[in-house]
Length: 407
Image 1 (cartoon, one colour):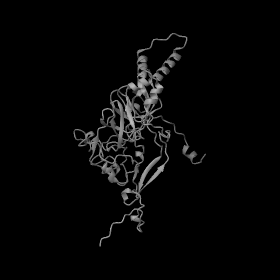
Image 2 (image 1 turned 60 degrees about the vertical axis):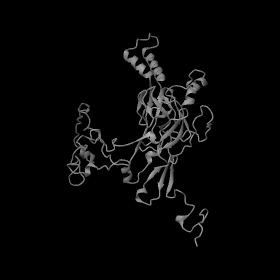
Image 3 (image 1 turned 180 degrees about the vertical axis):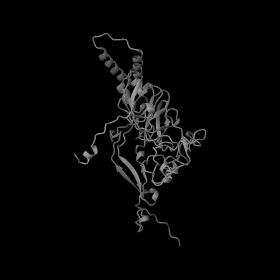
Image 4 (image 1 turned 90 degrees about the vertical axis):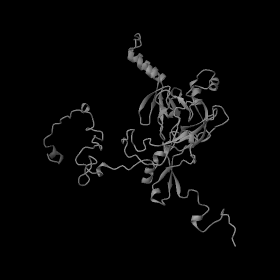
């Protein structure tokens, strides 16, 4: 006689592998390490009201580096480390916003078939997501979900326009979640915002109501000291800088401030008692250039002048813990379209300038590329007109004896 099936809820079994108390991820653990977070200054308590006008996005609780480790049941997961992104969408992307990646430099070759980038080939089948970097559509947009993009390290967000109900992908900001409302001000200031300021541009009020995480603004509307990403290089074109995971730039000066400082220095140089001199054409061009550009600092420390009408998104690019990942095995590199890299020292003499010989030797040659070009920047790679002549130092007699302790 068949027995009825018993419910396992709350049943304590003698086998550890069948325990009902086992979590859904018993084979993985979470390790947290404190780190400096650019957005750590945000408070964990949020006063976000979705029904209020000009409400800022909710503040996320700042956390350190959280990586997921796995129980080494196989050698491939022993060293596997992955950032925790449980908020990502588990399904497929919007099909009409993607197209298949077929032959777009998957093997590192150009249009003539020559290999221009080595160690590329294979990889998993992909669909390229059509990402809106310009964000020219005005009006509020609601974040439907946050998705993984196989073509980039940062995450992407699916937006739906509240007015036209049109879908689009953008590069997600760190801390952006489903349900947030973002807006682009590239087409101008909305009428409702104009009326709330009394028809006059108030820089403080304008920055307080527009410079929120995920909003896209022209650079001249962003206050000094703000972290930005997805920065454009030309007016009317989409963002090109700071688009990978965890990258950002900082607005350090505006054209009006630089122009006032330049005029003050010019007045001090000419003297307060003397009559103002007529500016040369070069000084006039420099003044116009300073007035129409914004100074930003990249993470590398480079300072650049960007036109004030270029676009930029407030915040930090999403997935900042991407740099701490470990693939765990060589196969995951092959899934990512990365082929093995062989050292030139391990090759034969006919394959690389460093190859051949007995033992571990480069054959007494300077570091070179596989095609014979000098590598490792230094004396051999500098142009001849930049190399300074060596200074001959006179040799001191009995220098070796004094070094050994002789008189």
